[in-house]
Length: 115
Length: 110
Image (tube, rainbow over all chains, first blue to last red; front, side, top):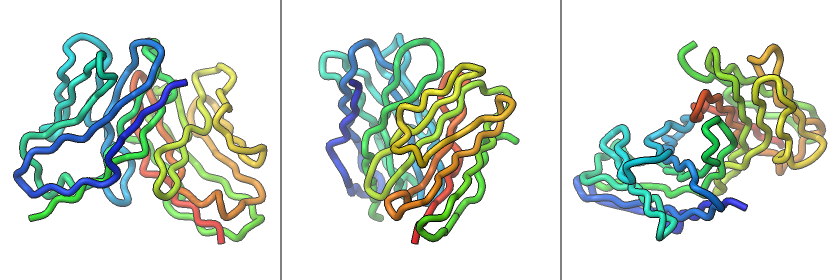
């Protein structure tokens, strides 16, 4: 069965500092991988996705993530965090079937940004 | 509309009552999903509709939960005889390749 682990429940960083949010997945085949962000009272917004090809993917708002098959990881990074990045971040995995399918989500990492 | 919409945004109900939650997907998206987000938890898959195929109901937690999708568009999630543990945010997503999420319905069962 597929699963996603986000080992950090809560992370605090200073504005302008770099950020890395960890995500490890368990999946029997090559997965589709996603990062979503959820601001308070909002739905989930897709930050970026990995389907195939280049293992370093760029997303919106200056985020990027790197797919490392050997480590079963898909960590999210940002070189300089802004106060508006404070939110909850979810990593998700889905089957690489070429069509839409249900996703399995991690439990999320809440990011707090201090000024 | 431009995105996935859900109504109501908030619903407070008494234990034992039935509730209906509505999802309007992005026009043309053939896939529609319902997820539940409980406090401190990740998103839990509930049900998945794909075109005219039989829905994948494997995530529904009990037979009190049901969902339908009319005309391949709007979907309604129904929870009968609500319990306090049903309190959560119910998120709908539609997809044509990857998922766009609605803002959710926050359900509180007193």
